[in-house]
Image (tube, rainbow, N blue to C red; front, side, top):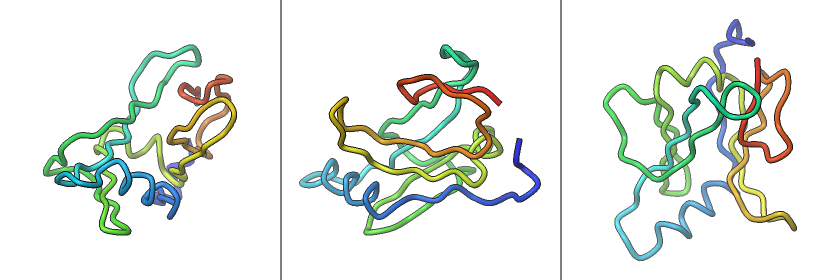
Length: 111
């Protein structure tokens, strides 16, 4: 893993803008980005609206919040959290420099 750099993940303006659209008209909820065991490549991303925990890394922009738990943080060091609207669908994506391989759908990876 590329943890020697200890760079926090980054969130693009496009991802914050999409989160603002999702939260529009209701109390804003943070987007949680986590890593869990499983998936076709060994690890999988868990991306969902959630509440922030006391020990989360909090990334803020455009009035929105993305949170990452301390266990997932080393797996996401230097990663970029983005939003893509493509032919295969609209979704939050993660460009992870720590991943040595990933599946075609982009939700699981190996290190």
